[in-house]
Length: 190
Image 1 (tube, one colour):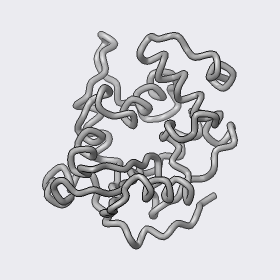
Image 2: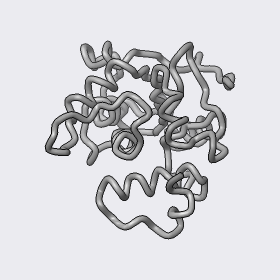
Image 3: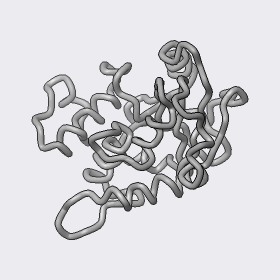
Image 4: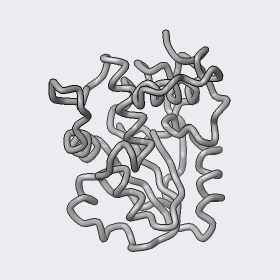
């Protein structure tokens, strides 16, 4: 099931192109962004997004809207998601948490020592992601409008009571080897 969303106000750049020329996103620009991932349905299916009642995310061709944000420096924030670490990006943390618990989609964790490999994740995100962004004077309001208009499954902060957000919270806690909050335990695993 696909949801219609008008992306015409957004600039669209493949992540691998942006890595090669980060000036494609204006320096210190305030705005809203979305990260869409190619053929991402298996990530959502295996981690229970639809089973837990999640809305179908918007699409652009075979790219699925997975994450959104607002920033007072779009280039810097996108860099943390596309080329950062689990410590700098909740998007990356969610992807690794899903990957560490479920094995039904293309993994990007390598090495027998059990350590996350950020470079491998960088490469996976670069090869599978489309960046949508637009300047906005009131970036937080623009993000709220985007989140009301379309599902952004890997966002948690504005959806703490949502069953899938609680599952992602639990998975992130497991990744950090922290106790799972009681409010999240019921939605955690099947």
